[in-house]
Length: 372
Image (tube, rainbow, N blue to C red):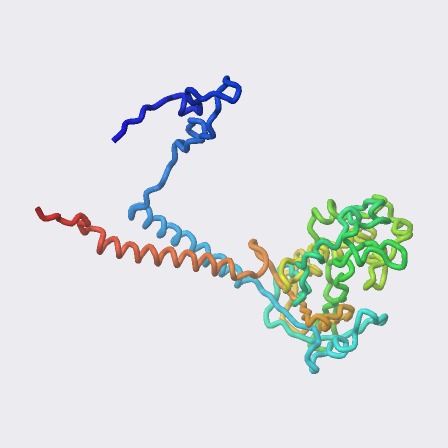
């Protein structure tokens, strides 16, 4: 066996006797420098998995996750929710005529009424949502079809929208405000709720239309051009309404300047695109009156009046109206509680199985006797 000598210079990348083409200089090696980092000699911590560390971890995770999951599941089940489909696909549906005959080209809205009853009262504030199915707001071209500078009140973008808005960038030679496919497909059904008394009379349920959008969207991302100028007709002069809209953006809510134009909360809610093809968006809030012991929505008979403006048969979609209460964890969502219970149960079960295996086989002597 041949012995090799160690040369510190060679370790650092220098070789004795190596001469360059001109007879002088040193040729450096491509070998990494002799440092702890480049030679991977940094200190490291590697856990050693033993029964004394793995088994307690499984049991602790199980004992923590299972109670949390039960709490989340019970809280979710305590949330009251009512859903009604008013698409009008079935012939027996009151909205069947509207669903079958109405298109984007109609100039006269279609109206239908759907009776329903609540078996249990809804306490505290009740949130009213509209839901759509088979509507892919997450499509890449659809999500990009908007001009955030225009929606933020930039005057130059108002008259010269982004090319991302094509083919909804201009109409008849005028720039569209707001431009893009998202704004063009704005949900515009009108939903009204009435409570029916046993004597046959009915009263409208007051629906609050403000406070449904995110604060950052309302006060940061969406602004009308011209700042606090209340004359939105002059502000949006020279622009065209979206193709599928019946009225321009400055007429979304003429009675309330703080809820008109680009800062209209129904419009803002729609512009926050959904991640899945089946989604719901907040439409109105039914607030509980202060110092009133009566429930917000008592049990009884109700009527949903729908102004049918949004056709969905062309893409085989469905439309729903949802009434829901909320809790500290938000709306009704049993999945989170089920997930916690499942993970906790699996960990606890694995802990029991490993404990049994360790108790039965862990005491055996694994070192076999070797005969002389």
